[in-house]
Image (cartoon, rainbow, N blue to C red; front, top):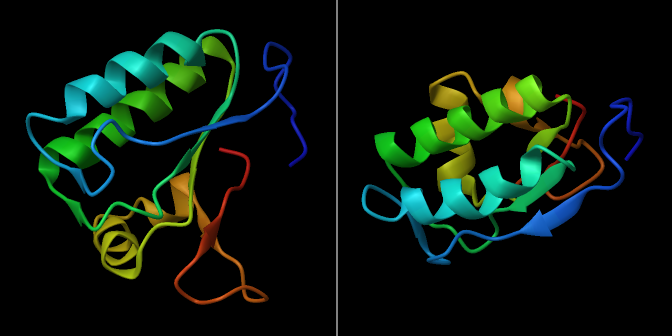
Length: 114
């Protein structure tokens, strides 16, 4: 991934605290872990094991995206499960946080510069 952000040395991959759900009550752990890193480097969040997301999880992803913008780093998601990718597309975040790679499996998403 090409990095156009001066403060971002490299992208890292992190997973949510609870690997199967990004829902109310579990979003705070994600915000704390990833938010602490975004001020100094970019983050690619692998969501391959997340099968359920709710409004709190969506809000956490938006908050992380905004934190990255403020810090001059990058926040993207990758490998969203089909159901999660569908929900993110429904709320219009698919074009902001990830894109579908036509050369890859339709259920996988690859990061793009945010």
